[in-house]
Image (cartoon, rainbow, N blue to C red):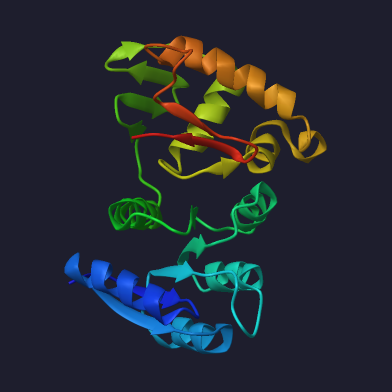
Length: 223
């Protein structure tokens, strides 16, 4: 059996649908209909990932995100709320991903696999995502074996994205990580550096396939 997963959602139909898809994929599944029961299960069971609705009857799901990540649980938000501000808030609080209902179960399972791979922990040696290899001690980046010269900021940004492959990293998170807290709102710094990275890494920078934009939210490095 693969990694155990907890569903926290007050809609019985959603819990049945998601449970069925996860169990067919080999996961053990627990579920809860409210925040209190969900937190109790997260503390008591060995779940590795929580699929979390935001519109819970007893508590806003956003409040649960940092509580669950503090328990070392990966979190994917699964909600009908589609506002950009909600996505940014959930991701900034530590959620691994954000999926808007209605959703395709195949896509959900793919996002689950990505979140669980990310939870697997930091790797030693170079960061490798698809055809990109990043050796931070040597400050060396290779794309399909060929070295790609990058500036210090380009390297730092690419490495931050590569540490979380497939995961959306918000503008604020990237800016703080690469430029520091004082530049947390300077999104233009980020856009300029992403454009430069795309020119160096993408087959067609005008139609990027590696560094994808989540409009108004952030970027993700595909793998």
